[in-house]
Structure formats: structure tokens, C-alpha cells
Image (cartoon, rainbow, N blue to C red):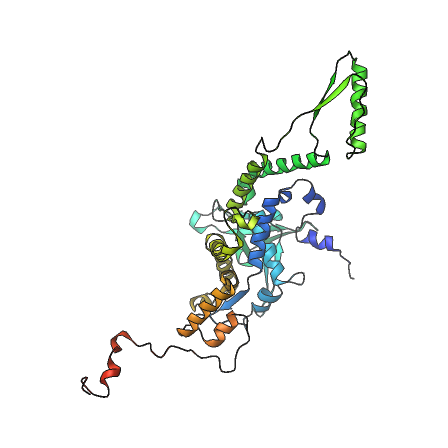
Length: 398
């Protein structure tokens, strides 16, 4: 019997948030926080992942290759799997995926598990050096609970882990900053909704009873709500309206909002230019900015990914042989075309890269005879300097 499922069902299966929740003031509605999540998730997802040996050559006939590099499960590609896991790692502090092996030891699939329904159970009945732990995942669609061993779960930890066992999300640390930014945005939204009109004071020189006062205010509110674009407000004789002078510049509203945004970005390790703040940077120095982002932020994240995948998906003998998973960061560090050409030319001329290696890094096709090393013929060992002048004449005599 087949069952029809919708896209919302799939989204619910993987713990996705509904559109209503996103629009009702959640942390994802704060633009700086959302941008930081987007930058980190896409940065990890767009990097190609490789299994390499000690010689740095790709291994494509490994049991983990297809599920990890191409299609982790029938719902998503490898790109979307990495993006979802990195989003969960930052937003919830932890990201989990169930590892499914075949009877022959082939990696069948990796299934993301919603971290909101995962618990870590520690066996505290034994001495601390002998204690084990388990993962308990509850499927929110059917209420069934699964007890999983640590070797059955990919676990990526976010933030500064308080105990080394589970991660911590940035939004817990920045709760006050997040709330301040959301409150500021709500204030702007209300100001725009009111036609950029602040509160006002109505003056009346005569006497007015409470009933007439309430009736007047009710009528004015109806008038303002009926047509916000109407800038003419009819007032009875003897009344005057004075708007309260609201200047966002006087209160340094935008400066404070920008400062708070930079604090949120800094907590994620995101550079100002990545949230469109180019006061101290420009597109011209994008190469150095990318290098700074890689060394200061992305390197630690990729190291955690690589170490977890190595430990959970490779055998002990493979690890001792130097086999391991590695992200290709060349796309981040590539720089402009001129810099790339100078680097590849230098590496090829020094015999470090083979011709085809350099062409692959430049995104070009390989040559039939390109698997060779070239080197400048004038290069000699330090101890061989002068030998060319003494070989023919012996002892240096002509």
C-alpha cells in the first residue's frame, strides 16, 4: 500500500520549521542571525568531500563513496545533506545522522535526525572511566523511540561544548543580543506600518468630558487605520495635533543595531563583509578575506567534520594507513585568475605539481602526456655546485 506525502510532510519528517513559525518572531527572523547560518551552511555544503590515502590521491572504490559523496539518502543530495547538518549544528548546537550499513559492510545511507528529539543517555552506574553513553531518538511522527549506539550516529557539535559530549548553540549565548535586534526590527516594522508616523499629542483648549474624549479617540483611530496613506486628519474646531518629534538618528538607532549585528556575526566567526558591511573592506581584498575566514572560522568546522567521519565511517586499519576524509578548500583559497596562474606556474615549474595536477586545479581537462613533473634544468644540489666545470678538465684544468 503506497502513501502520498507532501513536501510539508517531508519537511516535518526532517524537523523543518513551518513558514508560520519563521514569521512569528523566531530567531531565524533576525536577519543577521539568519545570514550567519546561511553563510556557514553553504560554505560547508559547497566544498567537495574526498576520501584520500597517504599519497593524497582520491579513493573512489570505497564502501562509503556513493552514500557520502553522491546521495546520502533518497531524500537529498550530498550538498543538501551537508547544508542541513551544518545548519542544525549551528542553530541547535548539535547535528545527528543515523548510519545505515548493509550486511556486507557497505554504507547504505545517512539519515539526518532532528536534534530537538534526541537525548544523550549516560550510564552513570559505573566508574567515570568506564561509563558509556547512548543516543535516544524519538520519531515525532509515530512516537517510537530508538536507542542507538555511538557508532551508529554521526554527531557534530556546535559552539563551545560545555562537557565534550554535546554542543551548545550560539543563540543561547547571545540571547539578549538576539532579543534586542528582534525588538528593534519590530519597532521599525510598526513604524513603517504606521506610515512613518510616530505618536502625537492632541491639544484642546476647551473642556471635554470623558465620554466625548473616548469617542473622539475612537474615531481618530478608525480614521488612521482605514487609510494609512491619508495624510489629512479632520479635527473639530479648537483642537490641534502635535506629532512627537521622533528622530532615529538622534537616538543612534541604526548605529546600535549595527553594533549588535556585528556582535552576532563575531560570535559565529563571520567577517563583516559577509554580512554586507564594507566599511573596512572591499571587493578588492576578497582573497585575504577568504583566507581569514578559512583560517579563523572554517578550518575548525571542517576539522570536526573530518574527524567525526573518519572515526565513525572508517576502520582502524584504514586510519593507521593514513586514509581519511578531506574537504577540498582550493575553491575558497583560489583567489583571482592572475594569482591562481602565478601559483600554479610556480608549483609546476618547481616540480611540485604535475602538469595535469595543475590543470585539474585550474578546472581544465587533462593532457594525455601530462602526468609528468617539470623542473628548471639549472637547479642543482648545493653540494654539486661547480661540478659541471671540473668534469671535463679534471681538477679544474682546461
